[in-house]
Amino acid sequence: MATTTEWDVRLYLSEENGTTKARVELDTGTIALTGHGIARCSPQDVDVPVIGDELAAGRAMHDLGSKLIQVADHDMAGVGAPPPERRPRQAYGWMSEMA
Image (cartoon, rainbow, N blue to C red):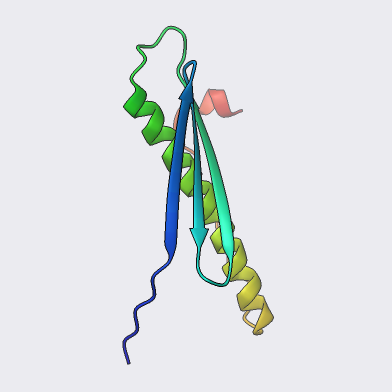
């Protein structure tokens, strides 16, 4: 039997002096979670506000997603499921910068 559930998500963005902040709120009806993200424009870069919005919002959603997975992991443990297998994240970018 197919079911449909709707969750409310709200995204708030604010920008001041080259710093964009994002807050995303999720309400499932049983839990409420909040994710946060920040993006800063480097002084030598051209200020393109939409890029700051995208970065801050993406970071806030990533933060929220991580919190939601933690809740799911806790709920699965509560019903006796084994802990999820965690794989290390693959690094990318400039490796010397990460050392």
